[in-house]
Image 1 (cartoon, one colour):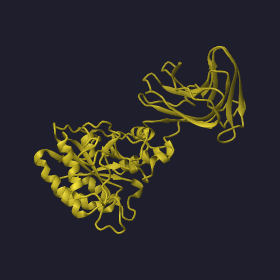
Image 2 (tube, helix red, strand yellow):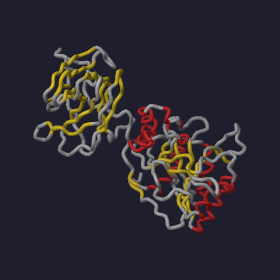
Image 3 (cartoon, rainbow, N blue to C red):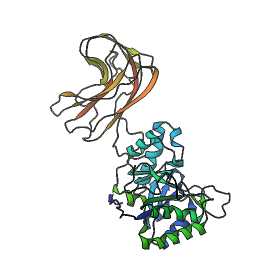
Image 4 (cartoon, helix red, strand yellow):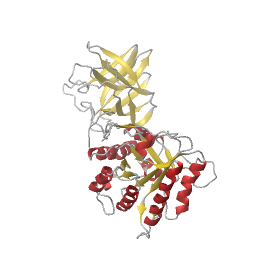
Length: 417
């Protein structure tokens, strides 16, 4: 796999078309042959868990596509409506699909949202899963008039929301396809990704998102004639370019010991590998409580009077037995379940090579919650001075904080699934 590709730069008025094929459908081999006969290559967006199913491409066929110069992109494991899933389940679908394809030997830098379904959370997860770009379904105009653009600029306005004319349907005519390109040519040029699914005609059973082999071949033949005016065909990766980033599997490896606060080998009420910390002028009490989110035990701190400072449960700041060792430049995701009568926040510390612990960073204030609520925060990039990490939850106002079930994970970890 090439580690880096150079991004494409368009000349004024130039149009580039990307032929996209979603859902790893076996009928798309027809398109591959037609493109190859005319010196073109497409981008095939694959759901890795569907490979080899009835009507789907096999892994061997996808490898053949790659070997013939086509791009392989990610499309989630199972093709869900992503915004209907929790953030963690979206991460599993998006990240682990990419990891599986990378493990199979593909260069995977481009993503396509199933159904074009995304929100701000989904977009950020695609970035966190180390994709270089993501494609929507829609956003470009399908007629000669309208307020939407005829083409995406290069580089795109948002590389994680690349627009199209919408997926080609059985009602889309050959003239419609040509007009997608002609509108871009007449409007100053740009990038026109065109999305195909089933290639059959007539389809049995009928398929809404389909095109006949005759129409697809005729369109590819016509596209070849546009080269004389500067209209070319390129894969998504060839347009975006960039480095092939490492895999990010989900969930990442848990870096904390005793994360559910269950073990307390000396019976002092403080969980093993954790410490009850704090500073300043305040009055407080600690309690090992059975009001747990998971398992049998949680930790609770109550501040009854405070002038300054805070109270916090953090991973024990020792020499090595309980402290994760960070990698310089990596970001670490801290999560916990909490409930509180006042605002709380995550805090992070690191140990220097001299053995001294120092304050590093803190997350935003989290709101009071009357029942257990999931919270997460991702640290800044780890400084080179950090040789060990200590993290936890803190409270700095009069009130009560109950906490349980922590995690700490390296967001740049390259473990495979």
